[in-house]
Picture 1 (cartoon, one colour):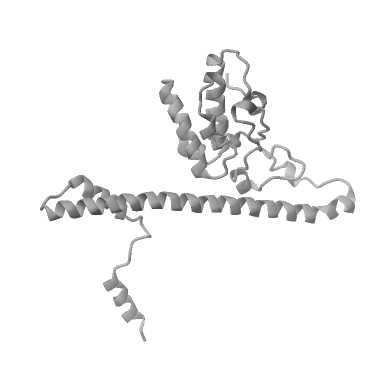
Picture 2 (cartoon, rainbow, N blue to C red):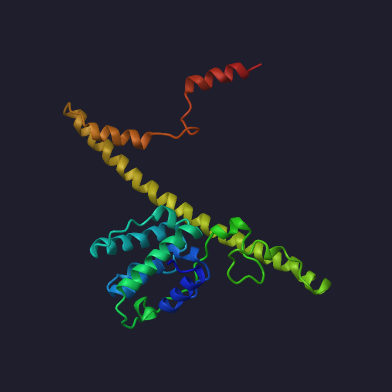
Length: 252
């Protein structure tokens, strides 16, 4: 039988000596890696970013986890693309699985979670996903399922009401700061992958030029170039001739 969110968070926080308040926060991958470390004791925790804030850092954590799965011959696909989005349902299902795996494989030995991560501070990672649903609300520690509670009218007259504008401003400022941080991470991630693609493009071009000079061709390289230069619908490079025709039609 699958454990509830409350039970899972209580177990996770006790095992790892952390203070997660949402299952979504597991999407950073750090907690999953350390759960495995509590079982095997040999996960390279120095490579795990427990305070990861950006998606490319989440992906790096999952690469560590995939290596552990491969080394330990754990036959379980890791849905990285879904988990890194920090959505509740995807991470709840995976956390339920990993809890069952832990129950079956943990030997009962003591585990120094803080020592294994070298005493690195473990502030709960912020997740952007809850903001789309209205963000955190005053008086809601978990921020889960608080849609109705957040709409209640506080009791206490004008005195409590007078504090609401300041609280609302602080919440909005917090959301703006969090989104700005997330945007910065996305830009770094974009540049990171663009540089990789650019390096591949240069290598392919150089190899193509070498082959053409020898009168040869390579189908695989041409297919790689097709992928690199392909465009999605709505993002095609405009045809110069077509653009000139449109300009002539719009000239009065």
